[in-house]
Length: 120
Length: 164
Image 1 (cartoon, rainbow over the protein chains, first blue to last red):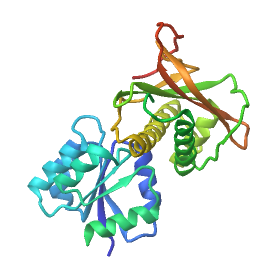
Image 2 (image 1 turned 180 degrees about the vertical axis):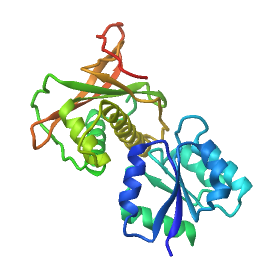
Image 3 (image 1 turned 120 degrees about the horizontal axis):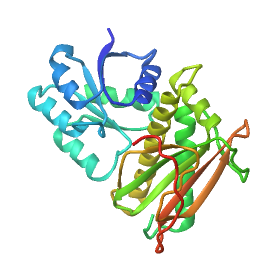
Image 4 (image 1 turned 90 degrees about the vertical axis):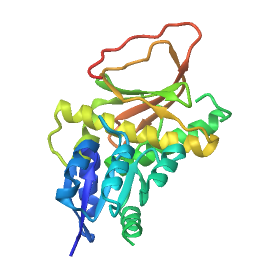
């Protein structure tokens, strides 16, 4: 049975790339959210195995959204996907409990490895 | 990027980021060359607002960006909205890659603002080009990645802003 992924990203480019990259893997996209607010609202209904979270989005950023989701659902597994995979952003993602960090542009091997580690 | 980085190091960072992101995002291989750009151009521009007082501009043949957008979105027809959306997202990822490489080299965290998209060639006011890297692909369509720094004498030329 495939693991269900909730993708939180306002970028159409990333959504298309994720669909491509996850094809033929043990993961499937269960839901798309275009903002942190939408992800917080829909998390309980979707109950994904894993969340991929962009950082810079319109409205609430992905770090704040991840922090709220983890506060409400401590068992949530969240992987940040961003081009800002360094410095204070990386440190904050780790401190709030993100299970992994994938740098854009990503490739399949890297993504599947980080997903596996996040769910271990 | 006004750090201790040499011009050669900066050029290497920009070149690697552009080639890597372009190939992985859009499946297009660009190589450095000196072929002039065509007449029909688009420009994407990002200003770094923390860490480095600089900006990056990509000016490209519209046909190249349309092909890249079509490849990325798996669309045979690329609308003007698709073109702008792709150009901004692609350049956002490219600048993130550059900022990450800069952090590795300098330990300075850079933040940048949202990308702006323009039809035609756009040159940011009050800035001068410090480094221009010129590329072309197998279809002889090209792009220029330009690193701008603040100039002491205000000047520069304007451009036709389309969004943001």
